[in-house]
Image 1 (cartoon, rainbow, N blue to C red):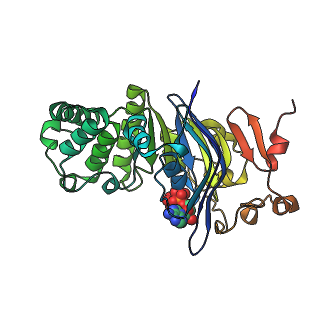
Image 2 (image 1 turned 180 degrees about the vertical axis):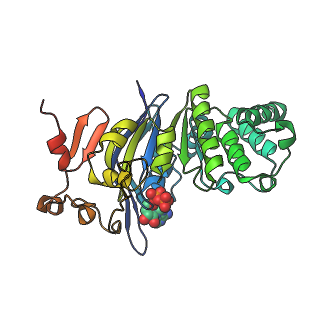
Image 3 (image 1 turned 30 degrees about the vertical axis):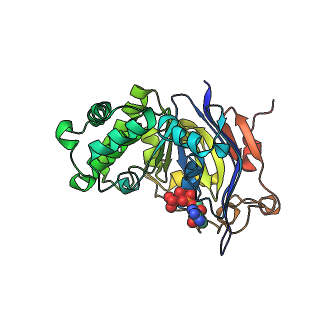
Length: 325
Ligand SMILES: Nc1ncnc2c1ncn2[C@@H]1O[C@H](COP(=O)(O)OP(=O)(O)OP(=O)(O)O)[C@@H](O)[C@H]1O
């Protein structure tokens, strides 16, 4: 499987009154037709990573290092014209809050048509035709009538579908999804996840899906990268993470949900809180909360052990799990 996205040694730091080391030495890949989950608690750097991939971070006081290679191009050095073509046609993004993508003063039909005209140079009539097709693709009932609806005239679930229609209108190869179902109630959430899965197959897209909810990751992801304090602490296939996580953080996340706790056992919580990100990590950021912590964990950076292809764990416990060659 060839990689559409390869992120190498990505570091994102925000300056200002206090420096925030939001993403530290992050490496990930996204294969063709794959759904990769970025999973972690609030503030772990998931959204910043996603925004770096699409160059949506503020320019002022933001330092980005590393390479973000998408379809053979380094996104971090694209000029404005290249960026405009890249967004929409190569990569598109959906958000938790549709207001970030949908403009309240234009109808849904106008917004989709406009995007198709701008990115693909199509006529107004072709844009409107695509808009109708897309509303049907995302299963909005009475699609023709909905073309003339404004975002505020739709329910939360329908607005989310309209945002997906807009994001997919120019058939991007990669969709970046930033907690798109978090604000929805449980039944609508599952409908949108199923829809995204269907569209991913239908369009042959790859998706990076940010979530703090392991249940959501289980519904939609093939592979999962677990983030803690701006670093990926473990990556693997969904079943490797859910059934045999090595790092104590994903283990703890799982034990705190019905998906990972032993049947009949009480759900556990991870004691303590994540560290502040005002210094770059010099040792294991999770050590203060870890029941397996050893002196080594606070004396030096943890090893980043590659157990297999795309199976990487940043923890001394992984050294014991590693199979000698
Ligand atoms: N523009 C910015 N300027 C300064 N700090 C920022 C900026 N954007 C994000 N941060 C900080 O970077 C860190 C990582 O934020 P990020 O939004 O990526 O977390 P997250 O894992 O997506 O959590 P959440 O789900 O709450 O958004 C946080 O400490 C956040 O406050």
